[in-house]
Length: 132
Image: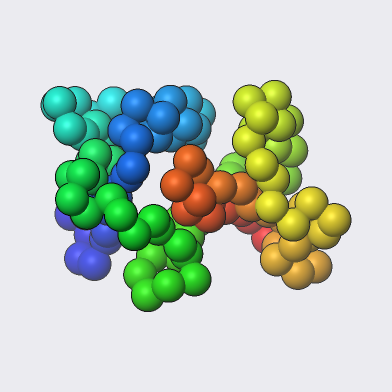
């Protein structure tokens, strides 16, 4: 075990089915496998790290998530190459997923960052970043 390696991330979501539909294919494309599944949640694992999605309880769903508030802003994943970013961008578009910063894509992070930015169903920003 590597000291300091991220163990897991747990995200509460407004609509678990919609979230699983979005994240399931994406995480599996990135090498994650289904790890756990129960009535109010599901998780995917890659090596020793896993990502958990849990249906938020109704009495806590009145204030929607916004990445500019205190808390999580985005999740960024490694791509294996620029070609991988391009292939995933095509898949995202085929699925009707909104690509953020389209006018600057794939250099919206600056000239040294080849990346696709997009949003999950709760508008959490997701990044897929090619190595430099």
